[in-house]
Image (tube, rainbow, N blue to C red; front, side, top):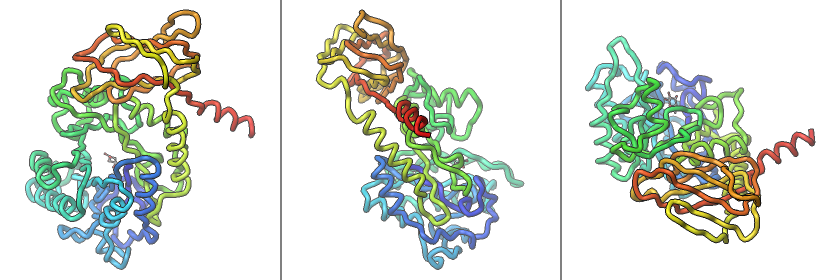
Amino acid sequence: MFVHLGMNTFTDREWGEGTEDPALFDPQGLDAHQWARTAREAGFGTIVLTAKHHDGFCLWPSDTTGHTVAASPWRGGAGDVVREAADACAAEGVRLGVYCSPWDRNAPSYGSGRAYDDLYLAQLTELLTGYGDIAEVWFDGAVGETARGRQAYDWTRIFGTVRQLQPEAVIFSDAGPDVRWVGNEDGAAGATCWSSIDPARVPTPGRSDPWTLDSLRHGDPEGSVWRPAETDVSIRPGWFWHPDEQPLDGAALLELYLTSVGRNSKLLLNVPPNRDGRLEDADLAALHAFAALREEVLGSDLLAGSTIEADGHTLTITPPAPVRTNLITVREDVEEGQHIAAFRLQVDAGAGWQPLASGTTIGHLRALQIPPTTVHRLRLLLDLAYGPARVTHLGAHLDRRGEHRRRADSHD
Ligand code: FUL
């Protein structure tokens, strides 16, 4: 779960200028336990907090600048949002990740090269040494122009510092090195999504030409590095909380799940706290509905108890009794790489084999939405693989979201 909180929460903006008065930051009811509890209840493993966004305001009392929570009225200037988030995550059994924007519109040294690199590394060091285990470090590739020029971030030093201080942390940036951006903020990985990628295609974070974005979305079966895609998307139109915006509902969140996790990606869903520092009731309701729907639709497999036959590159599955389904899930063992490159599904709905769906990649999970179908037998045919193909799961589910919506409409 991504948590965007900062100066923008109070100024109704998405990108601050860096000149905002710290006196504006005062989330009086800030309740990190509510964030962490909600994350746990809704099934998230990690919270990634915006410790510093592009406006440069630090949510922890950094020694590197005066532009921090220490200069705000919040908790009498003695507060530390990162500390409260770390404590709450530890109490709830959720991991903590940090977002610390390299682009800093407040730092006077930004654009000067080495002096800014040193400041940024000092900030990262505070975050990576003061708050226990950090599970993910999220690097935004945004670069701003200044009168002094364009800051060229020293990624070698930045990534090296994370490796040294938090060797287990997953490093996210457009270009990895551990997980890569999926190339859009719409909640959709490519229908073809390889966990491997050619590092030469996306050498550094912050490149937004269509060619790069396309490479990020799809990955590359012959890519030399394992760098799975992470799909970041917000529950609301903006990343930060705005008074006039509303969250997506549980059904829409399940759709995001199917087009991200269900396409071999990770999902990083942003849920922004309001000016009181709390997630709103509407967001909580949406997240709980999302979790309940995931359980209802994906929590069980209608093909459990089936007979399975494997013959060469074909897997045939016969349930004890015909099953009604509109969603098929497939999993591939990716322990030794992602290999499956083309597959077809066929169904016997009582009158012989018919084509049902086809696709390219599978990876850790592939969810295929299909027209409602009665399955007497289901067949998976693997047509192309770059290495040994190991299917570990073929499941069927009934997604009743459409029916729920139709019933709700008829009550109006
Ligand atoms: C982008 C930023 O510019 C947005 O404000 C947001 O933080 C998003 C997650 O990343 O690059």
